[in-house]
Each structure stands twice: as structure tokens, then as C-alpha cells.
Amino acid sequence: MKKVIMAGICGKMGRAMTSGLLKEDWVEVIGGFDKYDIGRDIGTIAGCGATGKKVYGSWDEIAGLEPDLIIDFTNAQAAILSINWALDNGIDIIVGATGLGKQELSSVEKKAASSLSKVFIVPNFSIGAVLMVKISAMIASYFDACEIIELHHEKKRDAPSGTSLLTADSISAAKNFGIKRLRENETESHEGSRGAFYEGVHIHSVRLPGFLAHQEVIFGTAGQTLTLRHDSTDRTSFYPGLVLAIKKIGTLGSFTYGLDKIIEL
Image 1 (cartoon, rainbow, N blue to C red):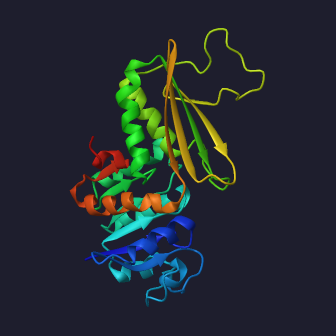
Image 2 (tube, rainbow, N blue to C red):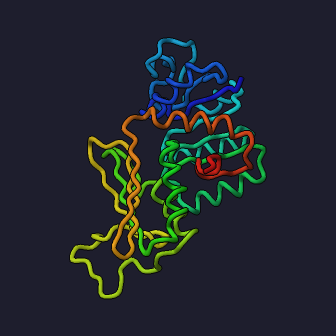
């Protein structure tokens, strides 16, 4: 049975994913890691009742539990610390935090190559969202332009979202729609009106209460448009992807980015 530590267990994602994993018989959540609620029972935090396992605030204490896997749902800054600790201690890690830059990812990949650990970074655990990314890449070559609108709750810290950046990466690998943010003779009466520009794709970020995680990929060509949309309306939508990641991490290389690497069409 795989022994798991949930980092960021007191956050909304940490609580929701822990609640699901505590019901499984093939994995054991042996503790949590957070700067909040240290010493509290992880089952109480996850709303499942007492388990006898608690939240720790020190990686030294976590080392004494001898986990097989760290699952990190913190933030980009904290996730880097978690990744480095896992790599230094030969422990596999799955990271759900977004906002990691290309330079940070490159450094992690380089360090992972000389470690016994496997690092699996997953910007979005929703299988539906991952399928949207893959389908976007499949159809990109048939259109002349593409823009992405991503919509999230008001407490999301990073913009654009990791999923929208991954989508743009996948699209640009199939077809690069342009190298300039503004077309010839195009102007903005207010700076930023055309959104971010990444890998030839415009990305527009919306942050409002009432949303959880949503994305539209809009393709256009002469006389027609095609829109792909995915909506996560509850955090339970991320759980099947997390289970798949846990089960597959042992088959992966030292560094993997994106759930799409383990989903085939």
C-alpha cells in the first residue's frame, strides 16, 4: 500500500482530495503537511472523522513517517520547497500547484534527472480539461486563429492559469498562429484589452466569485468558428485525475509535466 503525505491539506483542494483518498483501500494517507492546524487530525480537517493521523509543520517530522509519495496542493512558492525536499530525500511527488515558471520547471527537471525521485507536475487534474487540451492541438491546423478565455474563482492567485498556458503550448506545437500580440494596424484604446499573448495565442483571464475552473478555446477561420469549453463546477471533478496520477507515477520518467502524458486518445 502506497503511503501518502498531503501537503497543503488545509486548503480547499487538499481537504477535498484527502477526503477521497481516505476512503481508498490501496493508498494510505499517513499525514498532512501545512502551516495551519498543526497537530489536528487529518480526517477531521477533511470532514471524514478522526483517523489518528495528524498535520505536521516540519519536513523533519514527515521524514520520520517514511512516505512513498508527497501530493502537493500548496502554491508555487511552497511547492518548490516541497519538490526540492522530495528530490533530496528520494521520494516521489505529484504537484497540483500552478504558477511555476519555465525557469523553475527547467531547474526542477534538471535536478530530478539526478535524483531517485519522480516529479509529476499537473496544472489541471480534470480529465475533461486534459482532453480539451489534446483535442485543441488536434484541430488547430484547420483554423487561422485561436484565443483562450479562462475563468476561475476570485481567490486564484496566478493568471493566466496553468491549464491555459498548457493549452497554448499544445496548440503552438501543432500550429503557430502568430508572433505579434497585435496585428498590423490593430490598436488598444486601453492597454491589455487584447489580453496576454503566449506562444501565438491570446489568453484572457476572468476572476469572479461563483466560478471554480472553466476554459473556452475559440478557433476561427473564414466564415466559421469552433468553440471547445470545459467546466469544473465542483472539486470532485479533479479526483479521478489525481487517482490516475498516483497509479501511473511509477511508470513515468524522472520529470513529467501535464496529465495529458498519461491520457491517450
